[in-house]
Image 1 (tube, rainbow, N blue to C red):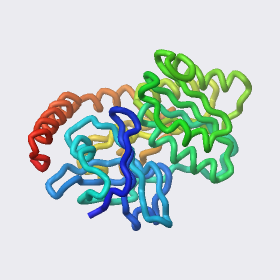
Image 2 (cartoon, rainbow, N blue to C red):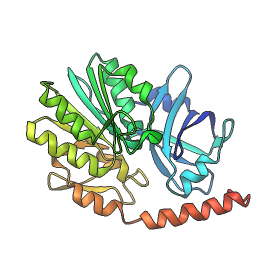
Image 3 (cartoon, rainbow, N blue to C red):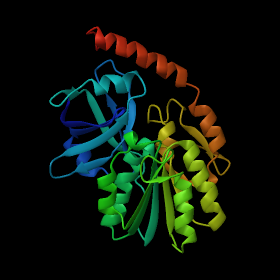
Length: 282
């Protein structure tokens, strides 16, 4: 059992939790993930390690409430316990030898991008962060990104915060202003990562993407996170989650990721009904 030592709402649909998990914290690195079960009969879901404190023995997770399991997880509070919390899993993000990197995050993907930006900063890299949200109300982790970034641009679709436009608009502006990046690291919705990669391909900038958004059980057994990279089948959870973005077949990945959307919506609605009725373990 793993105790929740801190919980806070980042925006109406995104929650931060700090979990006591000393063995995971001892080995966790940026880019890796954990698998948890809320209760003994619960579904196993992968969540990215959003941060860790080796001395305190805690691991941070940030999740969007989209399905039944995240609804149940969000129903827990400080002092409650998560039944299983396994990790770290996946390959860490490669940061060695990089001098200047643009980290691009979109929406809740910023929770994955932040530990990468932090690790790059700690390694002495110059970090330029570009983060995008639909509107002001959905902005998360702004102060945390500013703390590790030499330059930072916040974009919003409707112009209600930062600059109006897409993350690709900001990234193109930085590149055309003369910034020379050793690498761009993009983490967020699949459609966002696809167009970041199309942009960086124009300039010949190596680009890494995190395929966390398509992971399901995190072990490679379900096959739900299989994708095509450079014409070969890979699994996001065991071969990644980081891949060369210029070699990923995003169209295939987007088609597959939408298969269970209606099922997840129905499962969440049913879970909300049960939780309101006091039957949280159903």
